[in-house]
Amino acid sequence: MHACEYRTGKGMEGKAVLVVGSGNSGMEIAYDLAEAGAATSIIVRSEIHTPAYPVVDVGTYAKIKTGEIQVLPAMKAVHGNVVEFADGKRHPFDAIVFATGYRSTTKKWLKSDDGLIGEDGMARRSFPEHWKGENGLYCAGMVRRGLYGSCEDAESIAEDISKKKKKPHQA
Image (cartoon, rainbow, N blue to C red):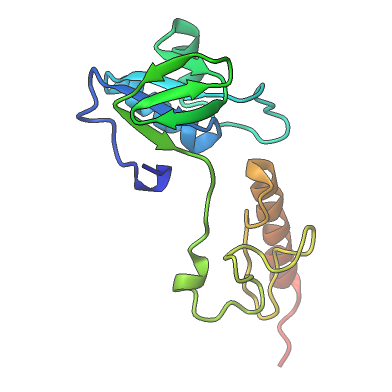
């Protein structure tokens, strides 16, 4: 299943579950599965670089350190319920959760996007001019820059709103 379909680890007790992806969604899902008693593994293809794209740790790192969550290398292939990894090892899993990317649904529910949102549901304009629409609509975190990017967007939006509130109202 894809991470967007994942709801809870309940019912996964004792089952071998692989989470593919070590971003925020993958790390939170791995934690939830381990808490529910699943034999949880997570694929981490490279060292996690928290300055570039930070992961909010909900307790996952501690579970990795204790071995409750096993870290595995990149996936090479899937053969039925057996996953082959880049190191040549193979492991069977009862379930696989793919936390490998986000697809925006903004275009499905936003009726007038003020020229702000592109056809892919993400910001139409590129960084750093992506967060402000023409008629007062804003977006944060829509240019795939992770949590830091979302934070910067939110600060820019708050600053813009603050400037507008300080201006005297014109008749």
